[in-house]
Image 1 (cartoon, rainbow, N blue to C red):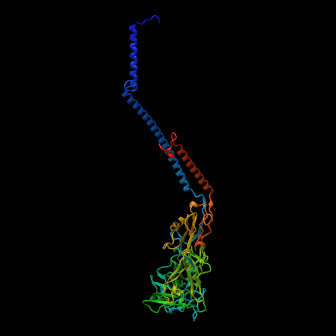
Image 2 (spheres, one colour; image 1 turned 45 degrees about the horizontal axis):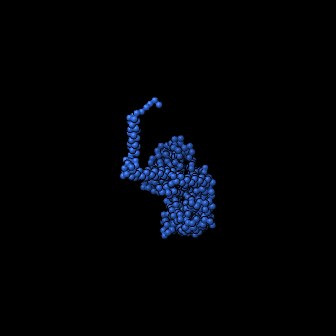
Image 3 (cartoon, rainbow, N blue to C red; image 1 turned 30 degrees about the vertical axis):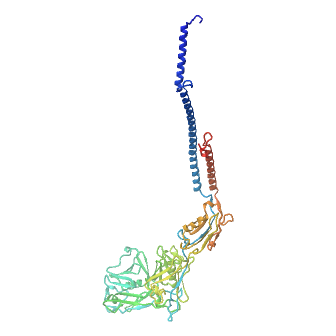
Length: 607
């Protein structure tokens, strides 16, 4: 470049341009720094002002750095708290699972006793009962100088016959075959005779064909009977014998067997009605006197009344058996149709011999003149019936004896804890209450009086036998437990809940809670006192745990049982404990890690 030569003017111009460029650079520097001056030489006052501002700006920058650090510290603490909250929730969940899980023992240590009738509302239980006994007045036999009855004494008497007046038709004595239509005061359709409460009805026409009769009815010649003592005699070809048979059926002298619409008659007690020389002879049964009532004109047609107007009655009375203890006296004969009601069950006395077979659903009590329905109701048959049969029926009704029915038979047995009723040596009936309830007997007819159960005056309308009651076995007794696992000793008295006594399960539990125990009762009245769940592994009354039982009721309780571990439950609970402990460790670690630049607010540091 040696060929280029600058003049002085050019050099000056270049120098001027360089100075201008320097000034522009200085100005640019000032503009970029925002300072009024760069050095004290420019402007001393402004220089120191600028320096002060630089210092404050540096302080502010330092504060901003501190605030930034504080924010980071707080954010770290907040993150730690969020994590800790989740961990605490997990710990609470595991703790709840542990609380809800079984105690780890299939059974806790306990003592127990069974109190009859005890409930959660009343620990005293109900009174217990034993069989009660009571006796009536002596029942007399039929001797002329009355003695006393035994269980084998017959309820009935000796059958007696009675005769009517001579009856003639057209100057000739009537016979069995005499048609009713030929009698002087002949019966007409609608006429009725009442025999021992049963009805004989006269109807026009001939007896229906056997095949057309309803079930339960049977025909014998011109007589149709319902098998229950009631009969209808048809007048077209009916005879005196038909009426005599109808009377025997109603009085119980003859028994009826109905089959295929036919009625077969058979004499059981007494003598069937007969006729000789125009005079009808009628008999009682052994179980009932004979009483025939009706219009006198109708009675006179058969010689049973001397009157022809109004109403009248023909009677024949049994006599008492005069052999020692063989039969009851006249006053002690039970009327046909009389009843006893025993604790709601009915005993009916029937003037008949016991059937060869019982109706469907009922059973003949083995060896007795009694048929029972299996529900406590019975029929005692007076023909052949004995005092023992009455006692049997009463015991079946009260439950003192049972007689389940099977295939038409009933087998008698004494209920456990009860006693069969019996006749005492003085002829008194000693009745047993049974255990099901107190015995209460009412009656109809003369049943109570005849059996000596109507009191000394014979006017009482009921007879009762109370069971023997014993108060609940724990009433008034004390029960105590020494301190159990640091609890407070307990001493309670079982009573009616007043004056500090304990009556209910809730009362007892309120006392036991302070001694780490709990009580429960089941439907059988079994009261169990156990260790609480917190001390499921402890044994009541042990040296280590305490809680020895005492008081007057202690002898009623069983020996304390030891707790029985449940392996599965304990494994489950151990797993829950492990999980819980792990979470606690995580909580500790999380709390320690919630720091920034060495500052941990959760650890107690400050900003």
